[in-house]
Length: 181
Image (tube, rainbow, N blue to C red; front, side):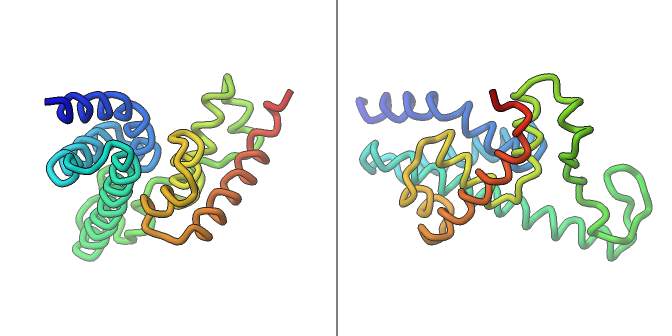
């Protein structure tokens, strides 16, 4: 009973941040919600017997895996749609699968001037980061995971985490320079 209550408390505490991570990765609220729910279910089914201190890295590893799977599915789906000449989601008859991916927002002066406050500009900048940099930044900064825990969650080396995190920081600092006091 105590373990169930602890797991419930953990999931309640992490769900909002996990949703934002998935939403930034997918740019789709429904897909993000689905990925987070699937990750939560898998954590409970497979790892509820693990110590509570291990749940955060395990959960984020599951979520990262779900996000990667989602990207793979989207790539395959778009490739088949392109090969067989199906219209893309916008109704366009475009056979090029690359053109079917959503454009990343440009982060020039126009994008920053349109952002009414720091949070909007930060979201735009985070969405523009490559996925691995985005995830390393979110796991380290928002979730407070260590380099080792982030490496476990992202299934990569600690050196890769450091590189992705450093590049994300550098990019975000340059993109959000106008907001410095």
